[in-house]
Length: 296
Image 1 (spheres, rainbow, N blue to C red):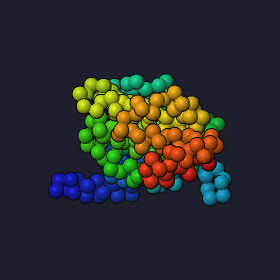
Image 2 (image 1 turned 30 degrees about the horizontal axis):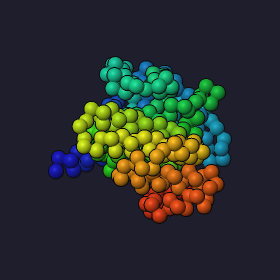
Image 3 (image 1 turned 90 degrees about the vertical axis):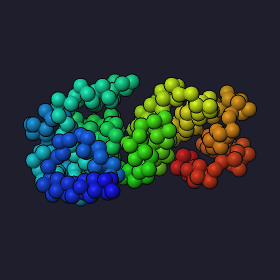
């Protein structure tokens, strides 16, 4: 009952803010709202929002015009239509840095710290680490085209992780992000894979500290899923070479189907069609459906 009431409150609150076109100021609330709405978060540091923030917006004919992000009505409408926008207080920096920057690479840390708009998933992890300004000014329309992702595909796994961070929830969300990357547009595949890495690295850390009976099998599964990332990014020959070094008898029974899928997809990807066919019957129908997105 409490959950229903809270969801209703969120819906009313969202309508109110979207109508006023004001950016949220609670990061915690923005994450919960993004989860409910299956949207990405558009975040900016407080100091960056206190001055003119010029952006380009494109019309239906592709013509660009420059506006101020926090003052222009059309920009506000676009932001609320495609994202959950939030201004993050500078006073939260230390706590957020401690929570989000552990084991992150330089590019991620640089985007976290800069004045650029940050597109985050509902857990607060940044996706647009490689996106650059156009002539020093952000093209908001281009940002929307790339990162206004509908996250309904990840709803169950995202909610599970949001409500209870564990090896299981982190692992499932990481795997689901890999599936999401499989079907995504080429220009964001790599960045979605990078998001998957964040959760998979967390799952690895939790697995190492666990005493699961099938710990070695799960470790092997994570290693095989690393090869799945390469398939998604079109590195079929790299996967083929790695599998050549693998002894099939060492594959745990819970990983047989995944191993067969990697063999089948990588062989098809490098043109060894006949050789790939011997693996086809061992691949699940769900994985077979992915092949046309992985082998083009």
